[in-house]
Image (cartoon, rainbow, N blue to C red; front, side, top):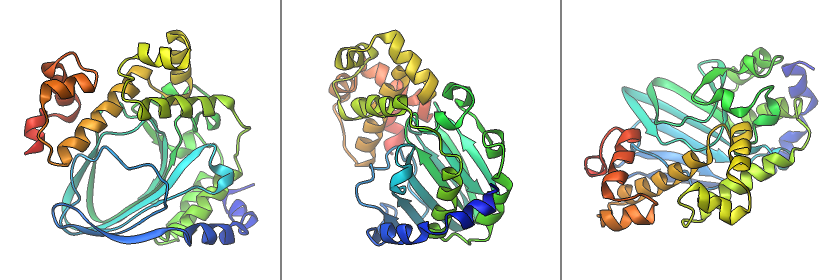
Length: 302
């Protein structure tokens, strides 16, 4: 079935999407620098952490984060969209999460694996991005190789999905940043390629949530103790399904915690904070932060 045929075949999902969207929260968000954006976020979605730069004072028009339809929730974490109209270029920087994504921008669809560094995207002019964030491990069933093969890579979606990508790109291009209709079209595309249920996807999600929710997990040995899995087994499942190592995931979530505290204006006790986040000492924390973000925490705070 072609991409366009899939859209027509699944046109009945529009009512389900409408029901889902009717539960959505609509609001205008004010960032610390005075920026305003029309934001819409479904209740219950995980907090969007890791933002290193606040939005510009004007130009970000709309930001949406939406639950996936229930039948895709095994693989998909959320659908999202950002649009902008900027007079001056803006460098968006984040500390990425252990997730794959499918994104549509400038008429093209791409697939991105886990980015183990800092993510930097230059936004300019008038444009937008619509995307799908997959659950940790949730993209592996769509691939023909281990998830680690796409680590730190962004590739044309046609390299992963061998058919229907051009039709999907053409259809999305006509929808003029209507997130409801874009969600319906991309959901239909995924349904047409829906893989069989995979228990290792659920295992990957549980392991990631264990790390995210338990601050006592500061090293892989702590995760071994909590889960009863061996280091070798953990490394295998993370390599095959998540696309990175358990050590990296632990360190990344601790850096997210540090960024949240710095963004809140907190003036931490660096020695105590280093211990809380699993670093040997203050110098270790500062060096780890600088290696990823590009500046030490004190300079970043300013």
